[in-house]
Image (cartoon, helix red, strand yellow):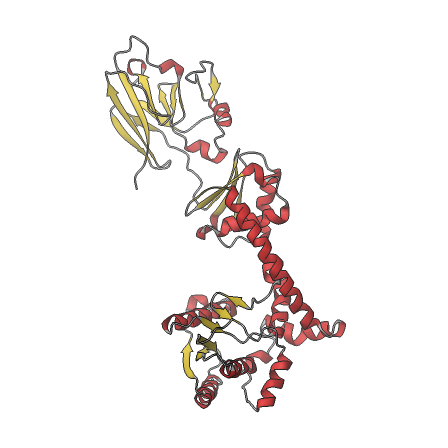
Length: 439
């Protein structure tokens, strides 16, 4: 946790744990540069000034620098006060550590806190990460007292004649943690007097096993990820269907956490995605919290926060022109030429200009649409073509179809119609190109 000469920020509330922590760190023969930080949460205005005075006097007496700080809770953050205050508290400690070039932030969590945290997380339905409790080390944060019980700490303070203050909020059952400490743990101790040691030891084991499983999941996820952007992640589907559920849950969680906008999906919804993978038909999708969707494609599982592709409206396509189709995010460029040429790829096509009726029409698919695919010749339903080409169901309405009168000329970016293929006698050619709409 520590090395000679480290600069350490110490969270100091004036309670037994933090007072012990400060004394112990000061007594270590490591030449530590200590800075004690008291954070006023703004919840106990009658007690706070006395606690600050106590902490300031303690630091002065033992020769440690002291820094009082205050949390300003935004009005919109009043709900979930404890969670919000914890985030703000850690933020302040990180800020001071940065300003003072401190490599460590020491907190006074003890073995009893560990047991309470494991029970709280179990009650909330946490996965293994939660049942692993409080890690002794996480980044800059260290917890040197995590293997010491509250009784050990109070005995130590008594042995050196050190005083401490008691936070009155720790005595009320308003908060869930206090209910666990004051009510649930005493009941459990009647069944197992060593319940605190038992829960702490189990947390150590679970953290180790969870850490190993996390490494396995990360390696597996790297091999399964097809593509990733700021709003979506794509995974190869077939391997997902063969992975054991215990690993699959972690793979999905790892993939989601790799994209900032997809974080925060809970265990229940991870299981919903697994149901989609294993039981749903190709093209099926489910809606998840935060506007996220999971879509089962032919070979790819897509998890995205992008809006569902909109259905294309109907447009007139004059020649020459560039037609922007905003709902699909594309542009169709139409140009005339009298020189035959080959289309460089599927995103463009050369047509017999003399057989086209002007203007052309661009629209989304309708029931009963059909065409005669180039190179195939036989009539085929657009629906069947999309199935064969593995176009996801929710993307099919956003594929532009170009029509000449009532005849389908081109499924944009995919396949043209054999009937409009240039012939030897063709004198006028039309080139259609599908381009990305620039924003």
